[in-house]
Amino acid sequence: MRRYIARRLIQLIPLIIGISILSFAIIHFAPGDPARLLVDPEQATPERYRELRVELGLDDPLPVQYVKTMTALARGELYSYRSRQPVINLVLERMPTTLTLGLLAIVVGVLAGAAIGILQALRPNGPLDYLGTLVALFGFTVPSFWLGLMLIMLFAVRLHWLPVSGIRPPLATGWNPMEMAPYLVMPTIVLSTGLMGTIARYVRSSMLESLSQDYVRTAHAKGLQRRTVVVRHALRNSLLPVITLLGFTLPFLISGAAIVESIFSLPGVGRLAVDSVFIRDYPVVITVTLFSAIASVLGNLLADVLYGAADPRIQYS
Amino acid sequence: MTVVGRSVTGAAPATVLRKRPELWRRLIANHRVAVGASVVLLFAVAGLLAPLVSPADPEAQILRDRLQAPGAAHWLGTDGLGRDMLSRAIYGARVSLSVGLVAMVISVTIGSAIGVIAGYVGGRTDNFLMRVVDVFISIPIFFLLIAVLSIYGSSLQLLIVFLGLSAWPGTARLVRSVVLSLRTTEFVQAAHAVGARSGRIMVRHILPNVAPVIIVSATLRVGAVILQESALSYFGLGVQPPTPTWGNMVADGRIILDVAWWVSTIPGVLIVVTGLAFNFAGDGLRDVLDPRRRGPNE
Image (cartoon, rainbow over all chains, first blue to last red):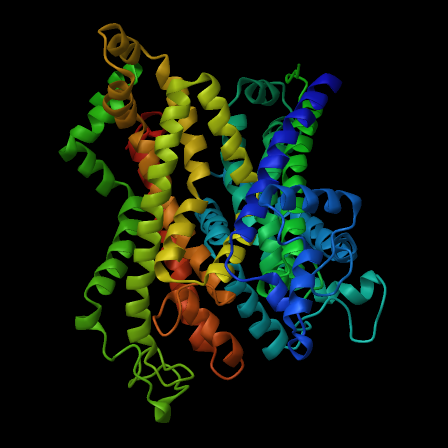
């Protein structure tokens, strides 16, 4: 197992290099000169502009720029063009919001999705099954920003049950769950719908398969209650692949977080990335892209390892 | 039901595709395909005939009539600039569906080609191609789309190309997995044995048998692309105004949500309905085309 993890980690190195080159290349082949964006128009002398180009290393050959950027990033010395702060600080500052939102969405999405899938599988082709299919499909066909708008219109503007945006009351600071809960309800719903749909579909089909297995028939034959059979025998086996599925959906969750954080004005990493794109703050864009890619890749690895730990039939070598 | 027996050889789907009358009967008999395809067809025809069926010019601004609720004069109301929502929705169908279709063709073509090559050739080629796929799959593609489109400016062509380029890895992985299992089947080995070249085997023997998987994946992809275009519209990076798409219509309405609910709500509903239709059709197609999934009474 340890060797398997080590090998997978080594395999990650070329992958991460590939991702970093890709994100670096796209941004650096872009038209538009960051130095022009940065010089203060008031004191934009040609000298100042040339100084800035040297300072930012924009005159170096591309491979040199790439290596410099990546070393600076690794050392925590890559600075945002705009705020002049280390990018790493900007990202770490906003990480708790995104992580909170992501974890809430995963928990809600998995629980709701699994519940729907199980109910469907217990009475296949019944009315509940059709309703469940519709809900699941709705989950991944609804545009998340539209769903966000609809929820805001209904629960914030019309009914005044929930706050429109932000993550905590104005003037409040810190992480008080009671204060923050109402602010997180709508973002969590919006971010978890897609995951819910995917999980529901998956659990439905894997539950149907488990329920038709011999060991389930045996369990019934020994006189166990239906409830015990469903929960202890069928469900446990059908939920296993959900672990792998979660690994796959991580990139979508991260992209989704960018949209959700923007709709609800949450101070998270996703919104930082989107905002930075629009002001051409490339160091931030590269860092966030790289971070989220590494997070998804590690998430996938973690999913595989957990799967191996949860399913004794899987042997990694 | 005669086809099921033949599926043992692995050549069944290709045969099924050639037996059109029977396939057609089964497609219509499948409720999901029928419902999904009808909805898509309705929107597609409306979009194609947009100049004939839409009651007004979708870009004509009649400020006197702005923000009218749905009613007799304007069935779906008017937006903040006094444009007729029904006409915009119909023209929007035209643009949204074309973006979805063209981007789908791009991504499915690239994905299938790479999937077939990786799966059939195997070895180092496979390994390399799959690592490239890994890179694309693990990047949150949406960030890159936003970055690229905001840097290069969003034009319709660029948008379609990037939406197409961003989605091929999923198809490639799926197709490869099917090709891997086909590679060892007897009919491929036989073709190999009689001296067919790799290119011919891939195109004539492998591709037709992966077709069902590709068709299903393509159907689902159209809905997904329309969804992505709408998300990009939220950031002002989708199809640019005044050309209406359902996505930028939703985005237009978001600032007047409290006074005119219909402006965002209606195009959003259309996106959801279209997405559901493509998913229904895709799921139904999978049942019809995949002999293993066919129920005993179908």
